[in-house]
Image (cartoon, rainbow, N blue to C red):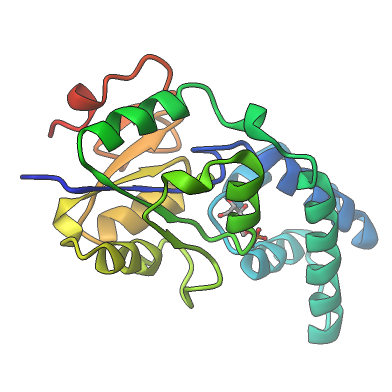
Length: 215
Ligand code: G6P
Ligand code: MG
């Protein structure tokens, strides 16, 4: 197969914003006396804002009105925006720029496929935005990962067949989305959480793109 495009998740792949999401959700949980754990936060990776709140409320066994939920979603995001307001290029994960440099030189198209509605702000603050030919974020999709919509829209927007796309993901839901879209999936992180991925690497440090993108 002649692969033509690399589609990247944002949070946990290019930058580590999971810590900021965790902090903001944890603080919100205090409103209904719920202490969110790190294991639970792992399950929120790749999951949209509204679905994350629904999951947390279910874990807490707490029923909230739609009005209350909407207010909490705004509150959570306001805190998250405060937490990411000082993000800068130093928060790009190790090896990422070197890897992007390699794939650009190899002629791959590069797209973002993220559930986050804040993706562009983060790409701008970290200076990553100029690497991307296309950005598909949470504002452009109606279905959350593991639905493949975000990656299929990426492939379509780049004019590339899904089978010619390679997805980089740190979340189980994201790997499932890539596979559901008939794409190759490279998991970034630990084998236990990313069992469905075609390949798994701990991070991009020292990665040779030609070797990694060989299937
Ligand atoms: C990413 C993160 C999730 C987050 C989602 C929505 O997928 O991994 O933890 O809930 O984006 O982010 P947002 O910035 O729109 O609240
Ligand atoms: Mg992620």
